Amino acid sequence: MAEKAADIEWALSTLRARFAGVVWAPGNHELWTLSTDPVRLRGPARYQHLVAMCRRIGVITPEDPFPTWHGEGGPVIIAPLLVLYDYSFRPEGTTTKAEALALAYETGIVCSDEAVLHPDPYPSMDAWCHARVEETERRLAALPPGTPTVLVSHFPLTREPTRVLKYPEFAQWCGTERTADWHLRFAAQAVVYGHLHIPGTTWEDGVRFEEVSLGYPGELALHPERPRTVRQVLPGASADQAAETTTAVTNSP
Image 1 (tube, rainbow, N blue to C red):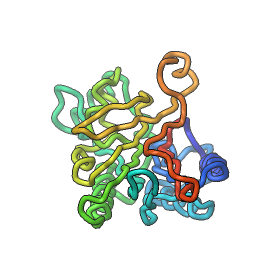
Image 2: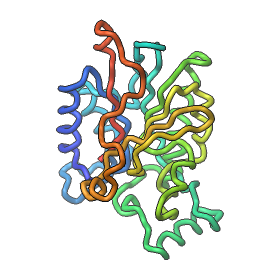
Image 3: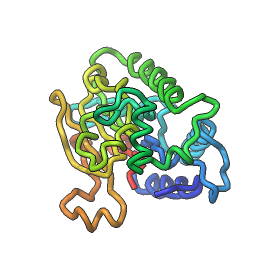
Image 4: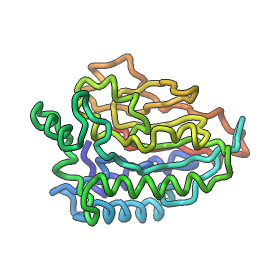
């Protein structure tokens, strides 16, 4: 679903009114600059505009101090991330970004990001992605060693979830190899992500990965067996801890 800035604010405000806390991990759709959106900001400037909006309505963003969840097995750091993609999830038979993109255009499997997601002032999405990875990695590495985390990202942090895509050419818009070991390096109790529209639970290196996309209306009819409910990632908090319980939003349509 393509979102205008006003639509994003409405959705997050609605969630904020219903949950004790909301954590926002932005995805590609929120960062699109659409001809129908009065907000004409592009790339990082649009992102910062949305961060300011989230702060105004009390929603936690990747630019804010990481919140701490308290409950059974806690405390656990909830870390919302924006790390984007750098075309390193390449289709089989390709070894460079140019080859991967050429194959995508040849087969007609091209993400709309190429037309409406702009990285400027960075020279490319790769450059913006690498800047985001470096900044995010610095913040995660500053946590005390072994601090339990839940990593929340719109884009998958590893390549594995993309291997089941019907169109493998699309994987290059799904993440970066630079985050492949973060679930181990940063003591993830769980990794939460969206983007692929293939909801479910998988395990990598003993760590639980939750894909929490709700999907488009047409996908609901095609795949009624897929989970369509809010998922509990950590054990419940007690009543006096409920004020610190959060729901995470990863731009799942």
